[in-house]
Image 1 (spheres, one colour):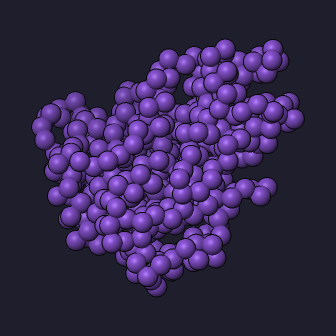
Image 2: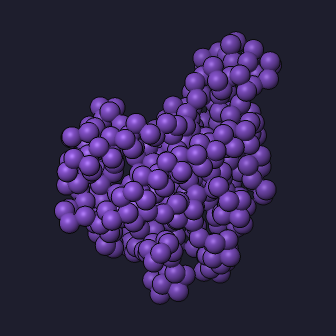
Length: 377
């Protein structure tokens, strides 16, 4: 049996996500109703959705879905896209396929826990690549090269990063891609926040466009704000790799839901409008967060994410950050993700930081409750 520990983030959310009065740590952009999304579709798309038969879909994803996803890429066509039931299924099977107990892998830290734990469960040896904060988040390619081994087969990264909001400069990312090409290493690139960069120059090229050894992970959940669709995918120019992943998918979801695929196609065809709306929400929200953290600058070190809709500010108080987050939750119902969610046996993760979300409309009531908590301490 595959030995996986509890998924700390999901276990925490299972208890609190729908019970807390103020969800201030959401990792997705503002969502839409079915009616709002359908209104973006053409008359033909809306009519087709109403007449949609609720039958099985191709395991690879329907032709319309894969064609729409392929428009996101410069070098990948529909045959180089494989759909999954959300990003987690895609991440799970891809990492299981890429490494074995004979291999070595490198993953960014802090990270989305499954990116680390699924690799560990394969038996591969694992090294962390630290994202460091020095007035801004960064990672060092020289540090990465020092961790390479003759059997390094995989480097897994997430940019824009969850939870830090960090995204490297384009030249650094392209140098990482070249390094993987030169060494014959797979680059697994979690790109689920791509499209939410407030500054266009911060948007990175996609790994699958840059290299035949690049595997790009994406999903409708984060930058599109449509997690209820449960539509994710990987893009990769190595079709034999995709074929092996498709066989693995037979053991889990088999195929995606037809209504979800149809709605995802509409969203993908209107991505510029949806991303523009979500970027504007983030931009507007950051004004409110700036004002809040400026008022409490003696307690917090705040910065804007490079991309995406989460940040990892520092708590400067004398008490433990986990205890601080717990007290805030129980007294005012404001949900943050404490630093213990992101602990890793690979590297030390700062214990004085918490994740906060900036992608959903109307954060003011949550910030007011947060402010009341701090005033009353």
